[in-house]
Length: 218
Image (cartoon, rainbow, N blue to C red; front, side, top):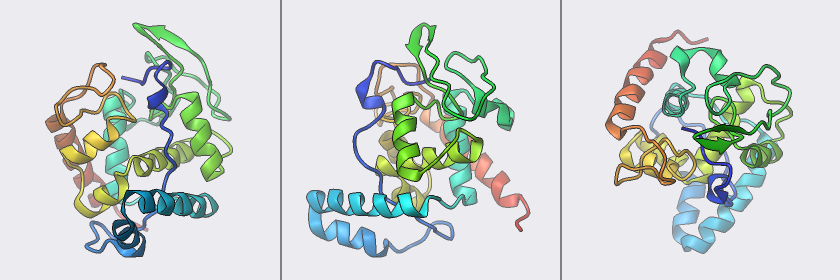
């Protein structure tokens, strides 16, 4: 399910960190992680601010097979997977489709809840505008939606953990504040909405990861 338009936490207030380019599940934390761990919560926030600015200049997160499997799992939870169809990038809250990918459609739909969420990752307008501004994304095409989703994953403090260890209930819980369809550690939605079962999501992720890794590269 998409996030509610009326929930301010759904768009998040914390800045994102930067990009990571792991060769799978890298064992090292890297200089940024070591510095953040050494400086405590306040230092981590400062480090994330600096890295976010650097990421905005770099503009791109590397899409590894692992990250693609994660993105597809989020789509599966949000109801935009559609068997892997790219039509999922054109889904409005409630399941209707829009056509123009030049910008976020910003159409509020009432279907039990009222929401202007749209796209493969059901971005609220404010959430999309934040990510687009930080990453300098100039349209709503699928590749940019993928980049914005990874920005949100990192903003929630889950990307480095995911890159090191893969998808887990802990990673899902960190992302539950961003996507209402993902479960907290208690198994429910952070926003009291319908939620996917965590074990089901892990099964989907593992199957999708195997599929991604089996695809030819280059």
